[in-house]
Length: 337
Image 1 (spheres, rainbow, N blue to C red):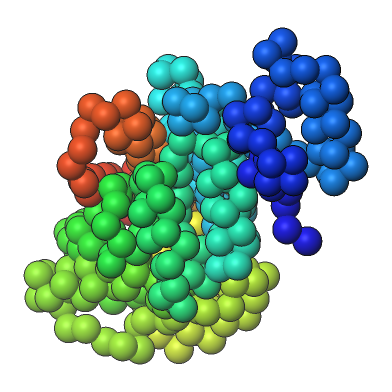
Image 2: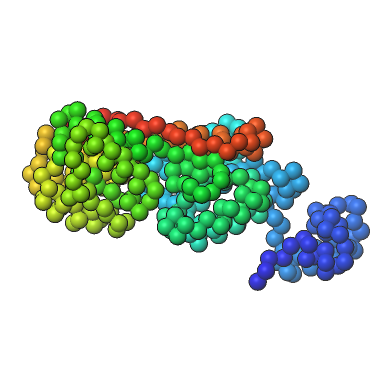
């Protein structure tokens, strides 16, 4: 059933949209009889006013829509904190939605919030959207005048502001760090090989090996496409058993924790026998045993940058399209020697 609009009510009574609006807002300019008639019709037909319709006149709700692909990733929680802090400082509210990696859900959320509920979006693409390469919902939103700032997982072909991690150099520098510590059999465990960020990390790993004069050996690379982290250990046990590695880089913390568990079970000592490093710098890293060395993506910094870029766009302080790259750092803990 199509949602009833002010336009529909105006058509029903052959009056102007502004008359309907005034009647629904109980304006003294409209006769009691007309007001009564319009209100009754609106109620009977389940008319819901557009959220924040009052501020639609100047098209500003001072609200930002934030869309993230999953709740289970501490990195997104860090980004969200950065967005919220920056938005609060500038007097903006934040509405957060989660797509659970679904393209349809992402489209629905964007459509739902584009009705005037929000001024602009900050989002990280759903996995399904990236795999399908279906970006029409982004294009239409931008064409309709609602700006989007993408972060972390971004659509290359969409012309909008972006904030990304320097994934390539993050991996490249990590290989250099491990090589300097005397490691020569560096494995790469990826749970993101089908996504752009995962590909960048892998290319950085390969280039890093080349830079330090180590041969690339595809036996030392494992791509885990199953999102169920409970299965990580089952897949990693034979991989680690068959390859006598002295260090491992993983694209995320869950994979790193699973790697350390497998190594410890097989009698290896961390970091004496094998060093382990993961992308992201979340709760798991600080509470794992041993504590995990990480490639920090500075989630809070990323969120803050995304919010500031969007607000500057909304307040017409910046009209250029920009891509901001957040550099990574190594946070050294106990899982590396």
